[in-house]
Image 1: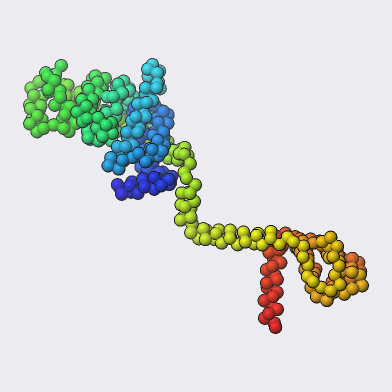
Image 2: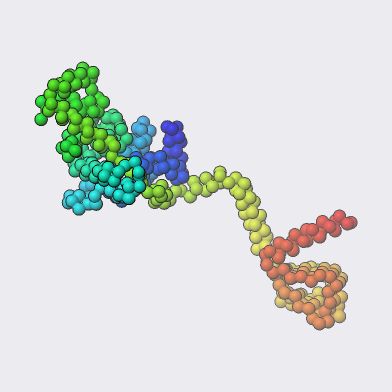
Length: 187
Length: 204
């Protein structure tokens, strides 16, 4: 696996674009997920994730092989998402589309016979509430929480990605989790 | 409200999988006694579970395609190199065709000078070779980049390359008479000539 990535990177550095397609295929779900949780909107997440990959391609020469390649990708996607959050107007969230619902229609939930309609609705609402709670977090807490939960990343990895001391990462996770608890703990 | 900062800290450390054995034991025993802390810990665990189990969406089906389409164009050299290594046979074939057509083209372009086979009785006027009336030419005539006007008789073949033939009513050619004006005709003419020469040498 690691060998495979190393070979691909070598080829990309020589300018072989087709090698990059394999990298995109491997990491697209994770990167998309990260952007979605950071931005709370599927369209924007798709856009940001694509941009992240393009940036990775363009800057492949700056990749330091002592770092995990996935960490490097996460770093690019995280920085990009933060940039986008900062560019947004602060009141955007108020009338933003209800996150977590697009793509998950009631019909698709009903078609699943294992869950009753009531259960489906409940989980759909829960999905929205979780995503809204994540979006309410200030970006520095949101970043660590998203990294921790999308890929079960270790504290060390998160500290590598964000280039922050491990102690800071811990504190931010704790504060972020406390903030989430206030919104979700009573459910 | 939980009892102390320290207890809450342990709760988070526990959730991060970053807690000492001793601390964990103390945390457990405290939680058993203290309802507020038990409640707080329960809420934190529930919150973590919610976030962990939030459903995962996947990007659009053509995500990879879109990314690849938007990449800056790769170096031409690399693209050719990849194509060549993937298609060695086509590479060899196209190289062969390229070389042979270019040499043929060069030869075709090269001889654009007016020339004709030396035979008796021929008259030349402004790039036109004339077989005069009443005269008989023994042998083949080849005219390059000019015309031929046949008023007399030719006992042999007549070939005009890059020009026209005019056969007067009294004129006569006993062999074949041919006009070659296009590069492909010319190639075919050369092929035929090689074949003819081989046949001639064989029959000798």
